[in-house]
Length: 163
Image (cartoon, rainbow, N blue to C red; front, side, top):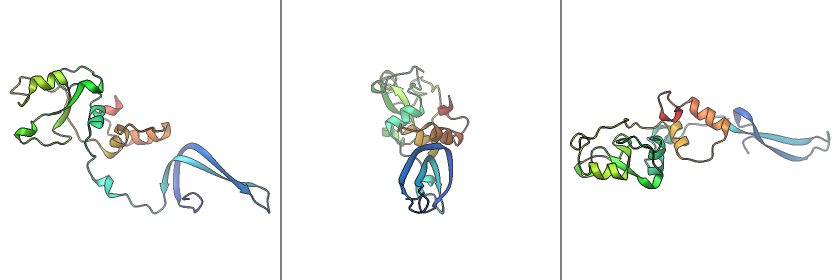
């Protein structure tokens, strides 16, 4: 374990769990390790994942856009939303963070295989590529309060996740 071998460089936040071991013969004290939600490992080298664009999925896209249709501006449940390509795939548009926005099924159908200008529809917000800290939040996993504070501190101030 990283804690027992002295591999923890630093921790943040209060301990979230305490591990108790056996009693020491000489002192009679019980061994104890406090585990923190956020740790930095000594000598760790950031992985390649930190240098890559996060994978685009519908749940993360809808979370990035806060479940709001980019055309009508209304908030919808997930089953009424679609991944909308600003420049349609059939017209060479990429399946990327910068070409995809959240749209309700009605607006997506109305736009069809056209560019927004051709359909006389304007975007209410612009797409962006989430940072890797934003991506961790967008994945929707259970994040402890200390971890969320740490992640949000690294998220750009203009991110929709601060709203």
